Every structure is written in C-alpha cells, then in structure tokens.
Image 1 (tube, protein in one colour):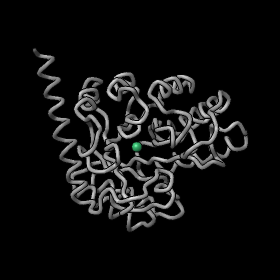
Image 2: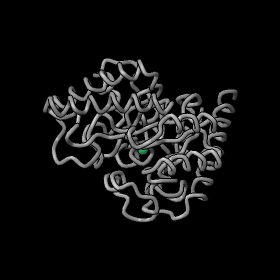
Image 3: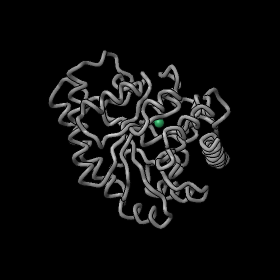
Image 4: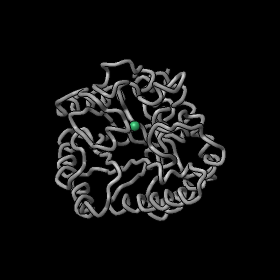
Length: 295
Ligand code: MN
C-alpha cells in the first residue's frame, strides 16, 4: 500500500475547526499518513489553515460525501440533477482548496435508503453528472472515486460489476472505484473476487469490520482481502481504516449509516490496533506473494 489512513469520525464528529485540527494531530500521532473528512462546508472552516497543518504533518486529505435527495444526480428530474452536479463541482473545489488529493464516497447518488427502483434514465443522468464532475476534478488535480455501497445506502452501485459498468457509461478513463469490506460483505458473493474484478480500477479502499468495530473481531475474512489486494498490485494505492461508534456523533452521517450504538468507547486503542493490524498483515501478504512468485 502507498499510504494508510483513518476516517476522521474515529476522532471527531467534524463540526468545528478545532475538532478537525485535533483529528489531524491524533492521526499523525498514531502513525497514519492520510485522513478522510466528510464533506466540509467551506464557509464553516479555515481551509487554508487545515491544508497547511496537514502538509506540516505530512498527511494527505481525502474527502467523501453523498448527495441529499433534493440534489440526487440519479434522479429523473433535470433540475434535481443540475443541483447535484453543481454541489459536486463545489465539493471538488473544496478538496482542491484544502490541499486534498481525492473525492470519494457516493457522489453518484443520494446517500440513504431508497424506496424506489433505480431507473435507466437516472443511471445515465448520474453517469453524465459524474463525467462533468470528472472534468472539474481534472482541472483541480483531484482524483474522483466512487464507493460501491450496500443496498441500504444507495440503489445504484451495490457491486463491483455495476461500478465497472457505470464507469464505462461515464465515458471517462479517470474515474475509479472505491471499495469497502463492510459493503462488499453485504453485497458480494465473494469480496475477494470483487477486488480482483475491479483490478486497476480500484484506487481507494476502506477497511471495516462487518459491524464497523475493531478489525479482526468480526466476520470479515481479512486474509482473503489482503491476498486479493496484493494480487491486483495494490502496492501503489491507499488504504483507509473506517469505524463508527455512537461515541462520536455526526448527526447526518450517524443517521444515514445507522450508527445507533457504541461499537467502542475509546478511540485510542481502536486506532492503534487498526494501524498495527493493517500494516502487519499487508506486509505478510506482500511477503507471501513474493515468495510464491520466486518459487
Ligand atoms: Mn466506506
């Protein structure tokens, strides 16, 4: 892997400048070289100051987001799609202004439980909006990745196969997939096969336990995940640890992700453990691959 990162919600709900700065410090203290922020409203934060602080700490910034229902680019209503497309362009510019490298998450859809089937027209509207966003991202030097999520958080891209088809329909070769063990565990017959299918198109990866708590204490089959990642040559790409607990609350994200209880109450051992878990197992998987290749 290139860099190992951590989601800022391990440290803070992200409502204040002080909270985000503390999250940067805590991430660095635990040896992480990347942090993920949820979408930041630029009027509430000093983006320059955050950019400088991240640079001083040698931490890369990634931002992830989803769209609200009234700006869902997979809608069949042109005005709703237009509103979403404008939000995405602004989001890309915020990533640029905070010195970030990547925008991910669910820019292609509302983030939440749909009560309707996806439509062909909505799919193509979304593909068009993502193509337009990719243009802005290219100008801003920001990489655009689409997180494939479970059925309760979007009705559009629930599997790697769908994600690859969608990227094809954007007509872009600079839009990539963002995979997540938590979501794949719900949707994919084989998460490891899904990683291999994504191959070079997977440019960002979330490590999550099946219940979003301590890695290795749940049902995710991590050995097969590490093996698949080293198989696709993930060495030059980034991994981020994501974990949510009601100990840290962001009103909007906690509700949409269904974070109703404490999966942990102390984030320090959680972050320390995840860093060690991923670093050590990644190194072991690489060693195993190299041994097999020379055998
Ligand atoms: Mn995720």
